[in-house]
Image (cartoon, rainbow, N blue to C red; front, side):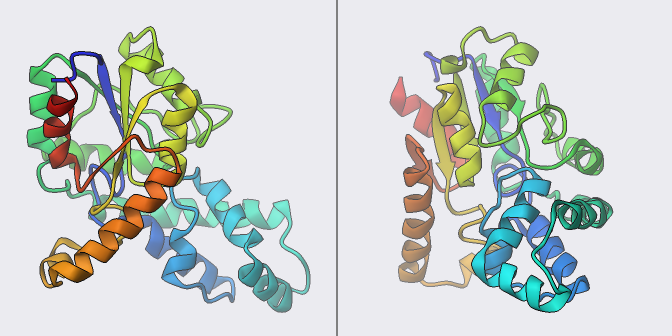
Length: 259
């Protein structure tokens, strides 16, 4: 399995934890509401995967939200506004992230299988380190502790640049990013892997673009699920994903098929 690779680098929310990627989405909705702007779930999810300050900035630059902000606050959102929203966002996300840190089903088993075949396990995230301090112990309690963690505020540039992957190379002792498999549920996270030259695997069904819980998906008919799968898969492919899986549980079988 993965004979041509030395490490797998996973994203967090929507990939290894937080099935449906609900923690950050809900906080963005609450944050903007507290500032007089009603945003939809789709608007909150659209820039997902970016570092969180950049996510807020991207939301403010979308045409509808930009117009609503100007109408409510009397001017175009400034960098100071972005900074103030980001400052408010961090403690809000810190409070809820741990509650949504349940592992995606099959992750611990998949990671154990990858490790048994000699692969190192890395991770990058759009979360800050202060947020991840709440997530890490919850994940560890479920037997998931990757070999490294690169957060959005650890480096000068985050996703979609390759800098997080380069840091993983240093942390994991991998001399060439082309020997890494990058696994992510968002376009910026896939772009991070593409920029570094990794093999990229998009996670469709547990991630941001489907945005459903396990129970919600189990109640849906196969036709509805197929539509959701195709929509998420299309976005991930367009971002550059080499392969698509439903969840991380499917990754070991994919890597076996590539040997």
